[in-house]
Amino acid sequence: MAGTRRQYAELVSRSGPWIEGLRNMRILVTGATGFIGGHVVALLHEAGADVHAIARRPEPRTSLDTPVTWHRGDLTDGAATAATVAAVEPDRILHLASLVKGARDPELLLPMFEANTASAVHLLDAARAAGVGRVILAGSLEEPTGSDQLATSPYALSKATATAYGRYVRARTDVEVVNLQIFMVYGPAQLDEKKLIPYVIRSLQNGVAPSLSSGVRNVDWVFVTDVAEGIARSCVEPEPDAAVPLGTGTLTTVRSVVEQLVELSGVDVEPTFGSIVDRSEEVERRCDTELTTKQLGWAPSTSLSDGLQATLDWYGTT
Image 1: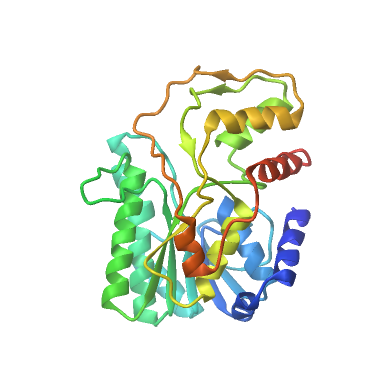
Image 2: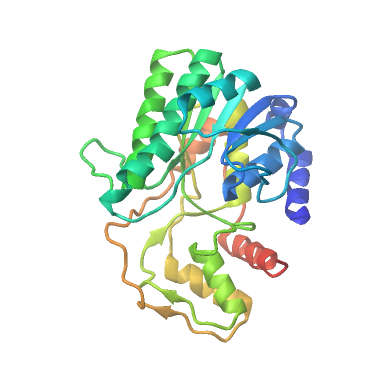
């Protein structure tokens, strides 16, 4: 973990004027104990930001064990969220917390609404009341992009609804709201080993053939350190448009990623593609990188092969 944090120190040392904008900026982060949140907090810390975070459980830690000022709170509780925001008085709020489940089960409607939509609305309203300058909402590539497009899952619906609330607050209040559309993130310190890449790596390390779907889905894979930089830039760049995509603009199939991991690992294991039924209505979408570069001055710098090797190296030390 220390090695990954050193990478952010190196990034800060070679970055342009935008990094100076983070120095001493007070930023309240939700989801700091998660995969992406842990990386973002590490970068903000190295840049000299005053980082605060909300967590429900006692003695929380980020995935990279970065120093941060913690506040106990439940984002589904509007009054408690407002009290925390008022006490912290942040310059920016980064809302990265999310309940992520791709199942199509309608029974997930209420849990997704409470965890993803209601929490975003509570933060937006608390920001309005406290005079917070900007709120960044982490959206998903799963969100429908057209008014006639149906959300494929309760998760996608909850994120799309939060995005709509963000656009309303941006248009009707003094709060700048940036909706990030984050594509498929991978990399070191993704602690949920049910996710594809950690699962495949651990299977290969144990000499076990991973059980997989057909692997035909095309995905825009983006390395976590690149995403952390894009999120950090969204705090300081002149107000971006309402929607900012963070991805590479390149589609690669799940099967290809798994085959690259097998080759890079040097393990003689044959994955069992097709042993799990493909999920219906998978979203295949490519990031508009020209739009992102125009708005944030950001473009991903890590190739898929380099990112997969770095991820393998990290899991090889844990």
